[in-house]
Length: 109
Image 1 (cartoon, rainbow, N blue to C red):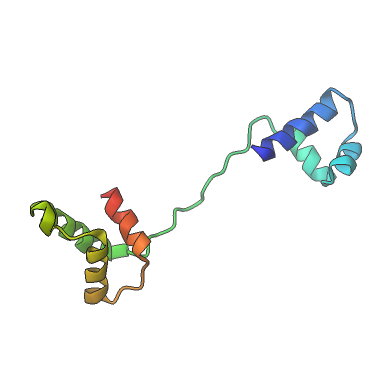
Image 2: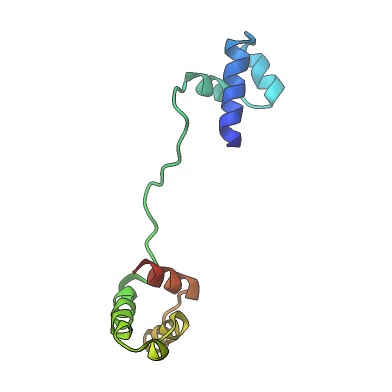
């Protein structure tokens, strides 16, 4: 956790060693507003995704799920692999999506 180490170092230098904000900024090579911002924060900064990306599969995920449930009733030797399902989807719908996206969807179902 490299980022939190820097914040802790800034706080230690300011509170324990009594260094000024300007001295900390100069020594660590960061701007004074950044040093001031990290001294004001109380909590550890956390990543927040604003919106989740929409999958390229979109409404093509339904046929995949349908095919998977139909193949679930077949004997193991006759079931289609993820690659075969992907190739079938591409052949029918002329879909421009990666095989890994298709596999990811199949693993989540």
